[in-house]
Image (cartoon, rainbow, N blue to C red; front, side):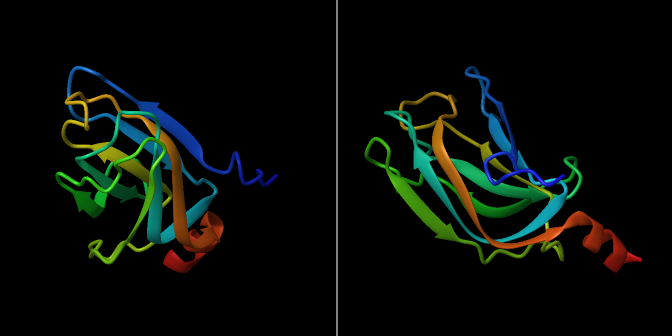
Length: 135
């Protein structure tokens, strides 16, 4: 049965405080998403500065949808900001998974990944339809 909107995405944080590469993944199975914009809300004093929004169909190959280097958009505690996606995705427009992948230190000079919110805007369709169209 379909899951409600709060559990439709499977959020799996992988946080390692000693090195870059922490990430938070949303798995939309049994759906695919076609993101056109996204929003992040910071959580407390630890704010992202260096990260990528990435998309994947299989969890193995990831495509960079937007790259942020030294981005100081998120400034205040609980600040929210949104970004449009206009990047090329190598022909991949629909993704089963999206993740925030931290590529460098945050505002406190650590690699701790802390988010208070992650919203995605765009299209949504069932995975069964995607498989049928690929045949």
